[in-house]
Amino acid sequence: MADLAEFLDDLRCSACGASDALWLFPVRGVVECRECGARASAITEQTGGES
Image 1 (cartoon, one colour):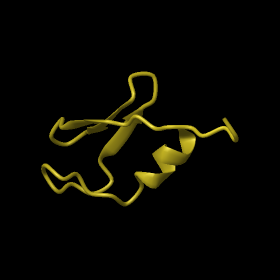
Image 2 (cartoon, rainbow, N blue to C red):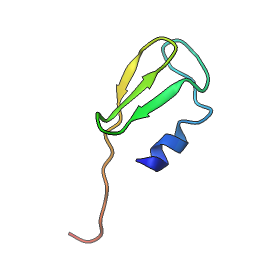
Image 3 (cartoon, rainbow, N blue to C red):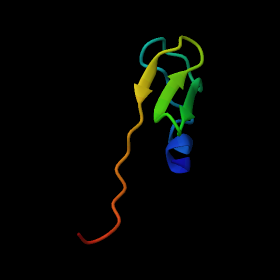
Image 4 (cartoon, one colour):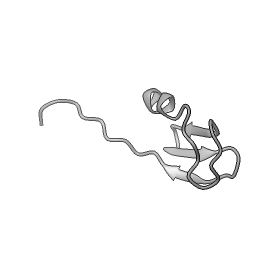
């Protein structure tokens, strides 16, 4: 999930428009805006090769 945290750099919150206010909580699988408190799920699927 470290790659996802880097992806959040320079993004704006869709609720309040704040820039660089998004924080990733990998244990909970949540992205939260530090300005307004809006939250979104950050569930990612990891592909590991052939099934």
